[in-house]
Image 1 (cartoon, rainbow, N blue to C red):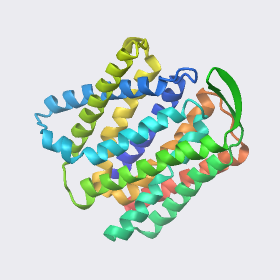
Image 2: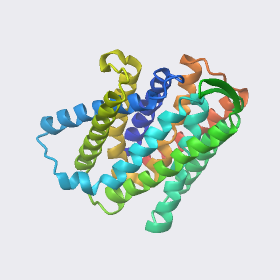
Image 3: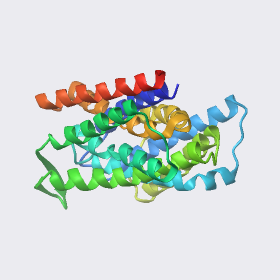
Image 4: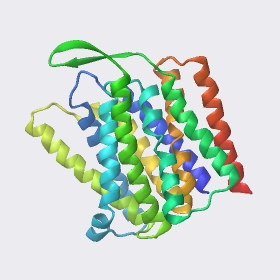
Length: 297
């Protein structure tokens, strides 16, 4: 079932990226803070419902124990939200999510995790596709800094912000694999609830920050951010169970959500794609199919 969970995660997070971008205002310097608040709120609500619906309990120690993973994930996500203020979704998402292959390499090196030939081919196709589709997209971006409009080539932002996200998210995913799959340091339920409540606490702190800064913010008027938060939370739910079953191949497979982000951005945001990018997307889906076949063998 890990393969199904990973694909559902990819679809949910691809959709979340779409609504993150729709809900991002490049002129609002607090846009990333508002997105983080909405995501934390959605996760806090989900964690509470999940907790009581399943008769579970969560201890403060679980949250502290899982804090290194939660912290890395939350930091990378907020950095990603900042990037969406300046970059096309079709550029930012693929570069950010090339971290999956790094995670696989680390798991193979440190834990001697086994990977089949089909899975290796699938991982290579997916990872190369995610990287190449971003490299193919060039252009310029308008930034408004200090009240003045300035032109910057997209190369710096397209490399620095997504790669910073990629690095931090990769560390988080590697730590997650250790906690959930390799060393079984925490259960799936405890990890999910600990992460979501940690994000909720961060959201509460950020909400207080906005109030102190007297920044107008109404939760009920943030439709796009709200939908993104719900999809993000749904993806997180399935992601935890996929990682606990087969982390070494789940990490690069889940990174394919960036391809769904590119497709959604083309359909709904009218971001242009080049013909070769469609070819690369097709190659990535071949990689997905190979990993699905490998699971059934």
